[in-house]
Image (cartoon, rainbow, N blue to C red; front, side, top):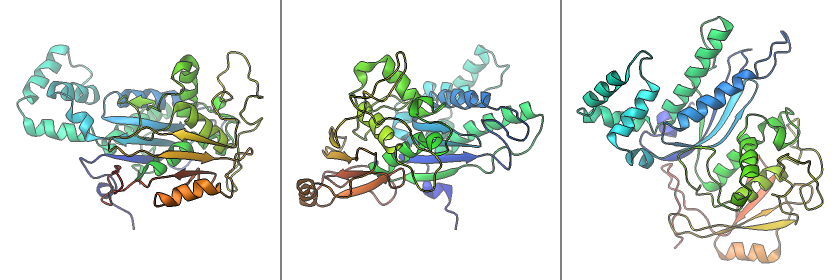
Length: 361
């Protein structure tokens, strides 16, 4: 039975989401049609441009994205507290950037904002919608569909439905979804490495890292939206290394993986090319120190990857003992069973669906 969207993403609640929009029938979002030979790659620019624009309006953080040939993947974080910190005028100004007649002058915009400032109920509704995953995806999908239909000279559906939405209830689920989204072009054999994965968040992170190498050991931040460090407690260096190592394992039901030498000191890179060679650790297992989050919980996470990119079948005895001493070893599979993460402390999950960490008792 289909779960109601209001149950997956209750209005006014914070959460992490993996959203997927897929084109109807043989419609093309990006890529090249094999039958007609027509290329739709320029539509990827539409997606990234619109995504960046909406991220600057909504109370959202874009954690990962990937524009594929006939579907779109997004990993998003929403928190109404970000919208609550905005003034009424700022909320109304952001709203008019979304819904405002094209022929409105600045005087007309100012007049409408002045009228709405006297309507508290309308402002409360606007605040709720600026923190809504459904409103965000509607504004994204409708804009792309209108542009595509205009270009194709047709009307009707461009997307097969609204969008598919999966709620991510803990840190491991969020990290797993981010890696899965970033590796989509690799798994579909559309790219051979992270640097050539066009129109993905991992390519954007690599380019930004190449421009600011001093930030490589800082905590991971969103690629767009509300600025700030993510609560995952993983650095840019370790996240890029994790994605690279995970992508080197051939998953049985997928078509592609990252080829070439494994990251490490011996791997060379061409000049002026962003590479993950200096971002991944050369050793078999490497610690990722995590900072304390808002609830004061500290943990240490290890990524246990073999030199071929796969998980080691057994953890070292001392690590297993330490995990058992702290209550449990939480193991999750990134990219559906490729890289294992072991956490020394268990995140306590609110079963109502909201994710936050409490200090273990």
